[in-house]
Length: 311
Image (cartoon, rainbow, N blue to C red; front, top):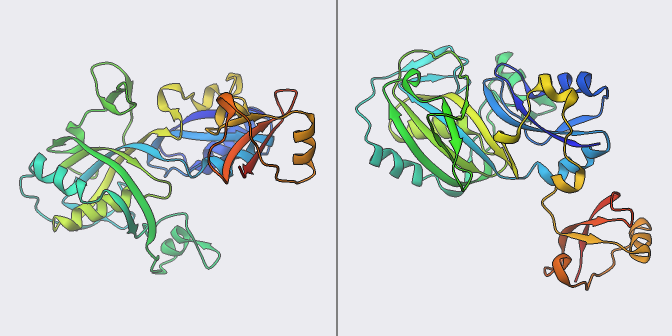
């Protein structure tokens, strides 16, 4: 079964999107490669039936976002779900100052996840514990922030652009024409930074908003979030959940960003027997790194197995 690139709508949980996909595609076996919060929209990659085996190879992919970070108001959820539990006056923000602040968050670091998150704590989701009034200290986790670009500063999120288009390098910019996004209802008129972010798996942009505010001595929250890319899949190629039933989807081989080996009969047999044969091939399927994951295509050009090849 194929892999589908969908555009998750506002106020849907990732589980809601999976449930809608199950009905549209008439199957119970649907998985996704990275959770999106209900107040976030954008790319949600769905793997169906046998393609659910690919999730383990795709969920660690880097992701791109457009993040609206509002200063002067904090919430327990760190986003626009509210209610506001902290306020402060915001001094005039300077673009150079904010970009310098963003640069300080680049690279590998330890990040404390939001209390309201889907992380499992003692067998219970952290958000469920938080809603029950249980304050659980979530340990910091290693994350990587590859790139953070300030696209603009605005008096409030209502003034910020919501129409964007990708440039030649896949970085999304405000544009006259392109894709338009719906943001959550604003909690008020608070100074807002619009940031384009490229981050590693497991990074919370809500935590970045909190930490940016803390660095400025201000409460802050994420007032809007759009995922524009997950792995190799951009939002410009995504389909709505309503159109999913008639969408063609992608074959497994096209969904994976891995080198490929076309297996002959002997190699395919060794793989089916659970062996780990070395590969000394040449040409465009050559593998140069010992221990590299590769996609092995059986002789029919369709059957797929992902293996670790030892040169």
